[in-house]
Amino acid sequence: MSDRNSRSMKPPRGPVRRGRGSGPVEDAPGVPTRRAALRMLDAVLRRGESLDQAQGMAVRGLAPPDKALAMALALQVLRRLPDLDTLIDGAMERPLPDDAKARTVLRMALAQSLILGTPGHAAISTVLPLLDGGPRKLAHGVFGALFRGEARLPDVPALPVEVAERWQAQWGADMALAAAHALAIRPPLDLSLRNAGETESWALRLGGLSLAPGHVRLPADHAPLTELPGFAEGAWWVQDIAATLPGRLLGRGDGRAALDLCAAPGGKTMQLAAAGWTVSAVDSSEKRLGRMGDNLSRTGLAADLVRGDLRSWSPPAPVPAVLLDAPCSATGIFRRHPDVLHRVGPRQIEEMAALQAQLLARAADWVAPGGRLIYATCSLERAEGEDQVAAFLSERSDFVIEPPQPGELPAGIAPTDAGHVRTLPGMLADAGGLDGFFIARLRRAEG
Image (tube, rainbow, N blue to C red; front, side, top):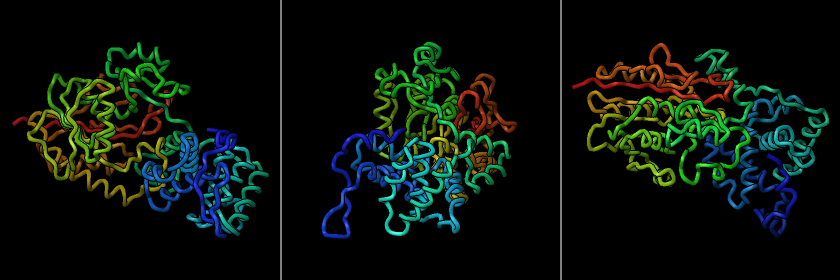
């Protein structure tokens, strides 16, 4: 994304700071956008907030193009942070503290120049006002030295050391390398179709790739979503191929009842409704349920939306199918949300695993005899997947794993020897990859 819009036109009167004198000081053009990016990065790196959480307050008052640029800048800093820090440290005699504002400002200047294509003078001049005194001179000097030295980023991004070590221990060095390669490319955008029987025709119409029945991957140069064929009539919704796997393992509903737990943002709810299930979608957020309702209206699909906390809510009766896409660390979606690489560690994973165990135990009681329970997380951590299901089965002898059958999974995705489904970086690499997921289909004994 270029910086042209924020520099080629006079912006509306933007954020105003108090000067050291008596009057207000208005930021120069381009600076409010960088100030918003700095706020988002500070929220992620110092306070452990998600980038989505931080965005709302940080970009308040900015025009839409500037909001998009601020988010793009924050994303690129988080995506290449170890490499940016290597450049910065190599240009200094004494390294800056990790949480120093001058370090983050330098990261932003380098990300603009080396990734977003902002001219060097604009990259540094739009971030220096975020600093005062000595740190401003320091940042200017370090950036100038790197710029004159024609600094470059490596083709393959480096993962944070702690993340690389954790994933290597669980999955091996090849997986960690594949994850680093995945960071280097823009994640593709996938669409789930309301009518799976029209997959090939929609792939042709959208110029995309059919990855499985009911699923189309868009080309990299696709038009804005709202301008694509099929949006207005609700023929599809955005959903990564990996996120469709839990719903695929429930198959056709034929009018039977299903619970979709922790249902937002609603892709799986629409997927189940399109497959003929009578869906009750449960989520704790009224705001997210409202967005789900809008998407259901657009697609012409129906579901009963229920606001409830699964730790206290219960359905009126057991049902044949329960899908629990449990809250998790979300490390599996690091390509789209690189903030997870810097704010999620062993403590957060342990906390999420404890919550998942609680929710899984409750959801199991809502499955009718002979029914199915799908447990899923968008996590690359065994504690939130394989280990979680193993612990559950050790406590619940009335459930067994039901492995996927031939034809149930898209080409290129196969069940593990244990009968789970585990998607990892490197899978479907030739087609653009997919998110990291764990899915287990469990069958409850009859009677």
